[in-house]
Image (cartoon, rainbow, N blue to C red; front, side, top):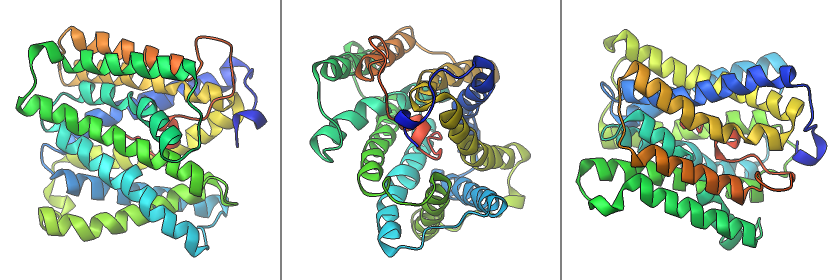
Length: 323
């Protein structure tokens, strides 16, 4: 389903509740990651949440009588997409949130469209670089420097944590154009491909996590809040959120659904401040606004409205979740 085949002027009441709910779910994912890494190694947290998400989507597949892909070529490409679109970024966000606030991780997630664009233009050749997009990239890069507070000097665990979150966004920058080039044209539904992607990511993590972090802890040994966070990340942030996102695209159109990118960091900041009592330096929200301005310019949101592809937060089976 593309922006060309979906409506962009649907009644507000038909899509706004789902749109807001999606922003809340994906924006809250960073809170749940922060709670989860307090007791779980980031790799174990990612393994549990991805496995939960995979089970959730398999149930939805069964209810809708859809099926997993059957072509070996599709599964081979999903190995790459699962690694860069799920396993690596989820884990990097986990490592990052051991060092930075959850709200700051949500801000870094908003840089994903700015990373997707140059890779799509230069590496995968799925997009063209226009003057408008170049200006947007320049604004976004300036916003990244403001968020980092480069005039204060760099270094320390907090800076390292920010780089890990930026690295997670960079992983999405590889996965999204790769998926668009090699998988998007297949005959399988988005739900089918996402469920398969999570299954592959679960297998990857099940192999790597014990080697790096040891055997995963038994869930019964975890606190209720951590178990709840894992279930929220997997069942809500991946399963339910994906279904809501597909409906938003179908009802409101891809260009309208894509603007959830701007809502996610807002909820991430609000939830982090209210629930975890987190605070930020002045330059971090200011930099976030500059980043979002760059995204808006690069996607043509401030000028004449054009069909737009769904950005990172809306295309990953968050997958962004968390991103």
